[in-house]
Image (cartoon, rainbow, N blue to C red; front, side, top):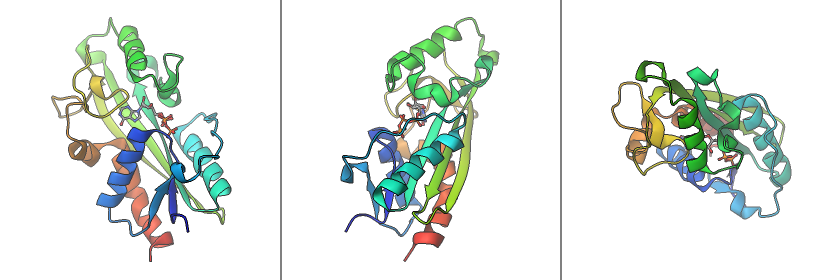
Length: 202
Ligand code: ITT
């Protein structure tokens, strides 16, 4: 028997975060991941919004596995770049998942921007899709600004250059628990947790 709910991501960092947030939300369902389905094909993230991409991933996994699926899509939206890299965050340098190269490109693009003009936010859409076709999407944001140089070793992606509003440290200098409390992914998933519990809980 497989798990009740499948987390539809192959990003191991995100998987750890998704599991931790759902566990902290006491979602009373057995949560599995794509390790159980090595033959699941990659889903092309062709959507123009985070919600569209999260739904594309969750629909594909629900159809392939026959189980309810939760997927998220997330990224960094930089004010001075008109909201980019946005849905292209994972491949902004041209190579999918090269976190260091991606954040170096953003730092280069903002090199002339003084501290007051370095506003940005992380955004996340989380989608739950049931094999019956029922769909739910929730969203979360984390507002902040970008540093001039990377700081900190925790987290992933753009965390070393992102300082949340009201904080002095980057999200890569925060503990995982502190980041979860305020993060875009934490907010989107905590909003989805009661829906998962209502639809799938014992
Ligand atoms: P899956 O599609 O398999 O879930 P992915 O890494 O491709 O994994 P996304 O398409 O959601 O995930 O891309 C998100 C990118 O946005 C990610 O690679 C980071 O560069 C950035 N990002 C998202 N959330 C972040 C966070 O909490 N901290 C730092 N960077 C983040």
